[in-house]
Image (cartoon, rainbow over the protein chains, first blue to last red):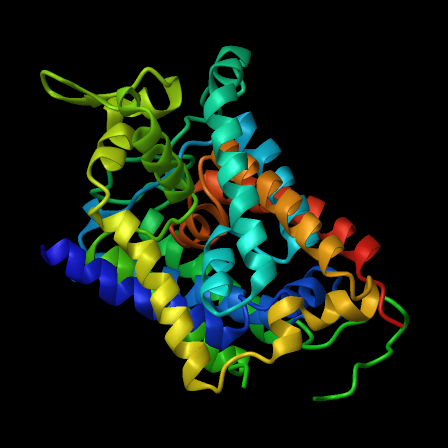
Length: 196
Length: 182
């Protein structure tokens, strides 16, 4: 029961935040991906950095249970799947999480995104044995690995570097990049969008 | 009405942190499979079957990893599925609190209208095809923007970096080709 309450509280907070940062708006996604307005990119980079610093910092002082980490496996299909997701993300302006939030916000096109998504997921369920047999789902570089070795974690490290410190350092880099990235870029030579 | 990247980024980062501190990293795309399974199981009750020590399915994907997807289909009141439903409620309330979306925006995003045109049919068709590709890709990759890109890179997972490299390598050229603003 506790876990259901947490799902409701954290899920609602996540959905509301995605709306407030503009991630559920395909126009902002489109302008981030066509590199004309990187505002949302800065938000995402800062979020990853802040999350990383809080998580690894919390683990170092014993406030956060290292056992809550959940690292996904690395395999060739991760890259191919990433390419596909990226293409569909740019076309539709939605990814799975922002798509369901956008539909709930009243965006009708997001309902079509979800319908397509349900068919796409079903198509993968049907074709999974072929991918499995192809070997493209086999682990590479150790599979479920982190870049450094996190003390107490059940995952191997790609390197022997302290995973906690590396996590803090990479988190700081994400924050830094968020700050130095220009808000409004343009591929047509310094042309700046008027402020709204 | 869109939050400044500093406050928005901190807020989003805190939500991702709270999820991993209290329960586990955020992920969404698996729930499309679970919802498919629930629908399929409603039509054909043989999709999820019980074994001596849990659940399995004649579908190899639902049966993988000890039948954990089959179990979620059989018991939809679980953390990850309720999480996605709660996301929808949270987003809907947030939109209502800031006055809701305009009629035009509900039909299609402003960038689409200004660069590609006002045909709803075209927008809905591309959203459908995009959704198909996004979820097929997410399931092949084993996660999406939330699970791989945000949660993965936050945990310094190698897979998160591989995924994000692929996602942006495709997304940027497609967006540059499709959305040309003068």
